[in-house]
Length: 280
Ligand SMILES: C[S@@+](CC[C@H](N)C(=O)[O-])C[C@H]1O[C@@H](n2cnc3c(N)ncnc32)[C@H](O)[C@@H]1O
Image 1 (tube, rainbow, N blue to C red):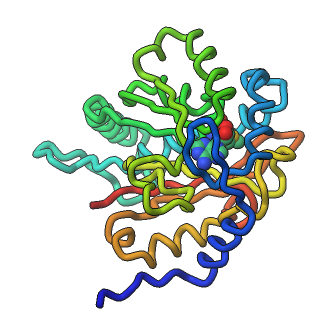
Image 2 (cartoon, rainbow, N blue to C red):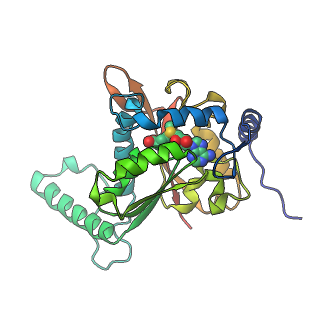
């Protein structure tokens, strides 16, 4: 008999916690989801003010800037600059600030040129799960190297706000689309209903955002919070995932009222971004 993948105790506890606290909801998508009715009413109520940068979602709007930095830097840092080419660029294995300025500028220009070359052919496809009113979806669709963005969400009200706002920018018309769909309804999700980060199955690099105590009231519940260690352990311990995915980077972030969002060196407390790459 094939050995069963063993889940860590932490992961099992989290899954139990999710099962215990989530009421199965039959929403207007007519599909099952682990999202509770009170969560859905909360997001529906936010729909009309979603794009008000001074409204209830203002902290999310501010966080999007840091989130885009993380996504952009992660993509740039992980491009394979010398793969599939005979014309290799020099990648210094040391801090380039040690070099004379002219040499440093030449190397940087070479690296930049190669990145542009790779990205011009990359045609990334993005899946934004729980896209809400489309703050991240729109930002991603404006990136020149992104070909298509699909945002999915359970709430028809927030999707309505997303579709309305999309009309304001003609660039988005052909690149961005939205669907009323739960994460559990994604094709890969059929047999695994409780894994919020499974969106990485469809994309080469994902960002994962998770929120805890300091979230706007009602936006996230602590019982459903999955910390970064649990996600890492889950990826490492599940055969099939271990061979196929690698955690590329994880960064904590914190909201400081008089300052805004800031990266932290500690991803273990509160909000964090995580990038997972498909390696096989
Ligand atoms: C805090 S909002 C996030 C908005 C968006 N990700 C952003 O950063 O701008 C969370 C969204 O997830 C959606 N959601 C909750 N459970 C979901 C599920 N099981 N499948 C799809 N979307 C879900 C909610 O309707 C809500 O719009």
